[in-house]
Image (cartoon, rainbow, N blue to C red; front, top):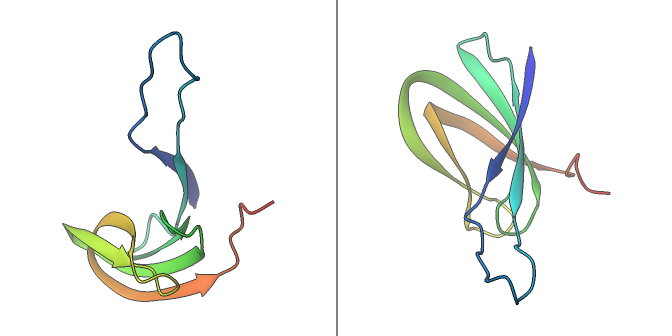
Length: 94
């Protein structure tokens, strides 16, 4: 079972006379949502590196996942435990 979402980031607000709003999004695809161990395919928030994250679901905690490419926080997940983080080519890269 696959589920794809895009998590919106904070939007930059501008007045009517200046440039249009900029909305930044992060691609996220949830895999194996009906199993105890799930997988997430996403892009790093900072460097846009594709990531495959395997995790345990329960009990849910706020976990910050570090990108193996840039070393910064790639994504925040509500999972019990991150089992692995693998850098992959981004499926959303054009």
